[in-house]
Image 1 (cartoon, rainbow, N blue to C red):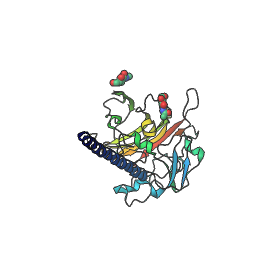
Image 2 (image 1 turned 90 degrees about the horizontal axis):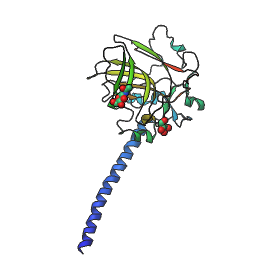
Image 3 (image 1 turned 135 degrees about the horizontal axis):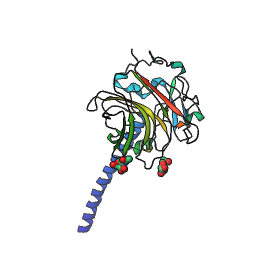
Image 4 (image 1 turned 180 degrees about the vertical axis):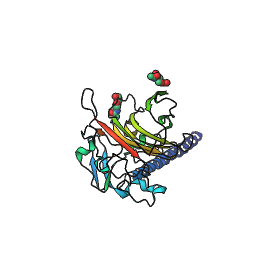
Length: 286
Ligand SMILES: *[C@@H]1O[C@H](CO)[C@@H](O)[C@H](O)[C@H]1NC(C)=O
Ligand SMILES: *[C@@H]1O[C@H](CO)[C@@H](O)[C@H](O)[C@H]1NC(C)=O
């Protein structure tokens, strides 16, 4: 009699634990699906890229940008109201300096019509690789480098994070960089490699504003070792605001040819053709 009683108690306790686990799993699954629905907007057309990505052509007004409180009644500006001297907006085509067209892999399977923008579809696995749903698409503090100090070209090695920076300080209204595109080997999945232009304003301690763009290889973020075009922004020193690409609201895209976070092709080869991307970021005085 005694033993049966104990056994039934054990079963009850076990059931409670299992039920708690199941409800956590259901809630987590629900949160992932909700987040995926927030990022992956209904599309006019979807293009399957040879690298496994799906590129959704989403109507320009449907992008996540406008969910940002500051962009509630934003009127999309299809052309900048101002452009830097010597840079004709119409001729700013997606091409490398020696006029060999640099494209993205998904272009081989289609394009997005005018009035839509290409968005790399986020998969459930992409979110599962992040340490949490909230952290998906954001830099971890480890990836945020400290402000360089006095010299013009710094070689910095912080806990295995090595980088070289060339920089200037002053009052600027625009910056431009041309970067040779490579596919550096990654040794382990939490490693990444990149080349970027990085604009900073404010102070690291509090209100740092940053706009970044370039190419990166980041298995953690994308699930493979491909070289991808990326952007990043933050308005509070990488704390609550900002993200890579279109992975949060705030960045308005108008271009229908470039998908943020999509693979670049072709890539430079030793003793072979060289490919580069030019990024121009400027402040539109309105
Ligand atoms: C950079 O730092 C890591 C870890 O602190 C160390 O293992 C590595 O040897 C350093 N690399 C260089 C080039 O100093
Ligand atoms: C990325 O490259 C590393 C090392 O070269 C390899 O071990 C890994 O399997 C690759 N990852 C993917 C997703 O292809």
